[in-house]
Amino acid sequence: MDKGGETLLGRLRDGDSRSFAWVVEYHTDMVYSVAYGIMGDAQDAEDACQEVFLRLFRAAPTLPAQTRLRSYLYRVCVNYCLDQLRRKSRQVTTDSLKEVGELPADLPTPPRVAADRQLRERVVAALQELSAPQRVAFVLRHFQGLKVAEVANVMGCAPGTVHSHLARAAKRLRDLLGDLSSE
Image (tube, rainbow, N blue to C red; front, side, top):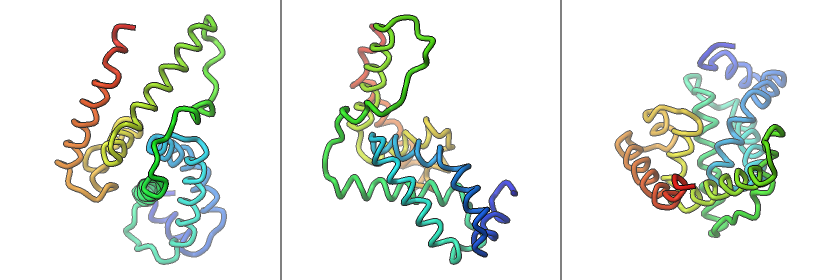
């Protein structure tokens, strides 16, 4: 498989089921991570993963040869998640964070485990307080490690707009989580 995914995309276009299975296996964690960061809910993130790969499967035969697979998956995931948030028009609560996953078993004490879980819940809840564009930019830049230009490409906006979203997100998160430094 080549770095840009051109050969892989060609195989997908030809209906190669092994290539599709490889794409799903290789990219599921990334798609889930983006979806969870935007939606704040494990079940919604799983639903997003299924939808993203279903859309890829349907679109593969018609995707242009220059399509970058990873960028395509980011864009489809972000767009799907934003559509779902608009449809739901609701604030995601931290009740769904119980499914975040287990903390490492080597934590020394139950109070420490509880404190870590509370911290995780506060951070995810704070992310949900950001506007959708701020949250998307923040998740893609800081959780996925994309460069600003890549985030701009996925979001379909200018790099300056991404910088603006990131600055506003950082300020809002500092305001919401500023008391963490005293803990």
